[in-house]
Length: 156
View 1: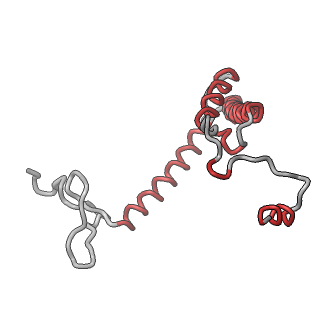
View 2 (view 1 turned 120 degrees about the vertical axis):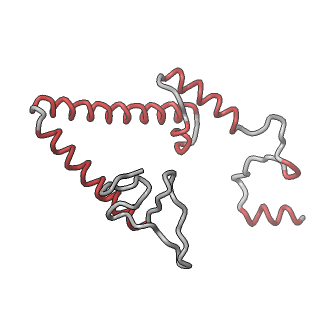
View 3 (view 1 turned 135 degrees about the horizontal axis):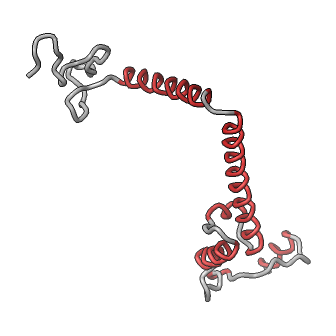
């Protein structure tokens, strides 16, 4: 039990107002029994973001130029590796006949792993063996006839 002048941990602290709904009842609370309005949470998140930015500035201030350059190089290297991996996925997809939009679905770190994954993906999306196309069948388009000739030929 708190002594005089001390605040009970379950009580509201300054700036923390319990959120109330339109009918005057309190909104659901967190695990320790306190409730917070949406505006208050947004305010806290904005303050947190500004503090993180300031902290990063203080951390960077204490770094040497060499440390800053090393961090930039590491970041650039990571970005380059990501681009190379994406390029390799697209190359494997093109070589295997996969549509370009499916290249991002390929998983693996090496070309062999990507090719194996592409083969498995092709098995999944390829037409069912033995399917003849249904009642219309699968016919190659006849380039010698126009659409009008095709329609007239069907009528006769």
